[in-house]
Length: 67
Image (cartoon, rainbow, N blue to C red; front, side, top):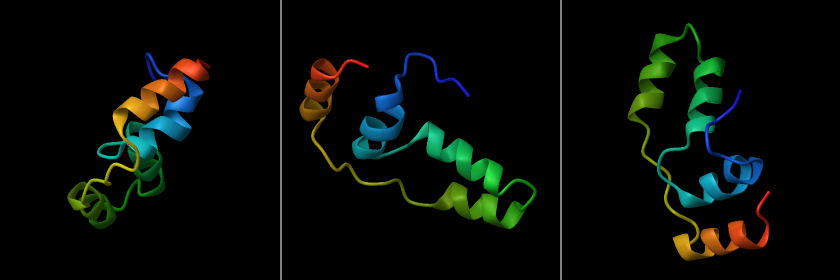
């Protein structure tokens, strides 16, 4: 699966630390809960994750390790 404009560090490091909506996590959970409407409804109602790191630190990390 490819995510337009994203690097591997965005998907595995920066996005989870950024909090809020995580597209890759949602895609994985959708595959795990495919066919289970109750669990899919619970997933839709789950609270968004909180931010773990300020945005300037994530941008600095991207500049230092631009992979």
